[in-house]
Length: 266
Image (cartoon, rainbow, N blue to C red; front, side, top):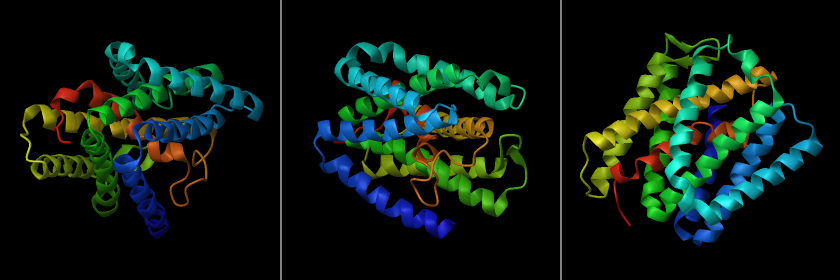
């Protein structure tokens, strides 16, 4: 399983980095929209939506992402705080699962959550990318480091279950290992770019790492509610696109919300 994950992840990461630095901005925005639409398609399946209505949902989501691209300046001041508030609510659902399971059984609610999770994430990518590819790369690096660190620390040291009712494989030791890796990447990023670092940068690193865990756990709640192991099978060793984006969905809007605290480089 680990070998397959690596064989899938390495070429995908290389392709994404090439797109980040070499694609025109409009093409990059389109690429991110496609990834989020794929995640939306999988989310529709988790919401038990038949194929026809799922296509209609995808068209609505595509229209919304296009509107965000055109009107993003007017939406930034309220959409990111709304996203943060939503993730506080979703984190409560995670912490109270399975008692909270009935809340998520309605198809309409699950689709509504998809819109208010995916749309702010798309806007966040646009904002961070416009500020400079390094801003977006920093945010992605923090979340990826937290995910990778949690995986290996959990395998080596994991004993105390983090959320046994949601994801039995996750442990407190893994979460702490992920947090440590996220902090190391954040500091390395600041050092490599010769930019100052301090409390704001470290605070956002910690909060993004924590939110990334809840993003992962919330998708696990959706999958448990739907009775499936993965959101899809498009990425061998990883599952679906949503399985790869889940940790990023809450963390990127937070990064965009605190853009002034992020390191700055071309």
